[in-house]
Length: 121
Image 1 (cartoon, rainbow, N blue to C red):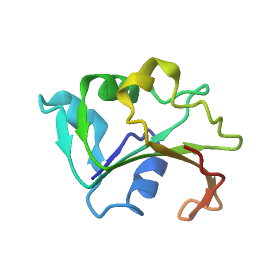
Image 2 (tube, rainbow, N blue to C red; image 1 turned 30 degrees about the vertical axis):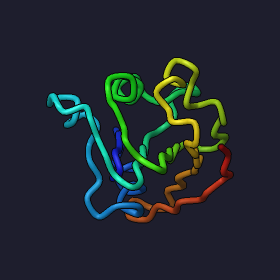
Image 3 (cartoon, helix red, strand yellow; image 1 turned 45 degrees about the vertical axis):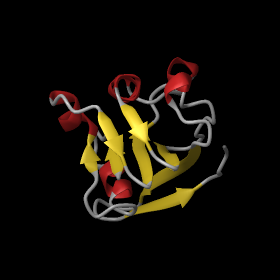
């Protein structure tokens, strides 16, 4: 299960590399379901001013996740800060969560390359 937040479409593009049917965080937030269970759960979102968007942080605070593997794909233009997940949501993130910062470079209006910069836990 992969959840995504996107303003430009780049994070949806990235989310589709990890799931055939990624789930929109804004659509989930309009509903009432906040409990999710799967073998692996991922969050794909951009980094705004060193943090995930407010809606992503709200989604993480208000949701409950049952999974053996929880990961983040953090999209940024250049230098992706490793502290982008932020302390304000640290208590909602499983201890074994993995964050994968990526950079999205747009070469043309139809091509975007995904570059994995580093992995940290």
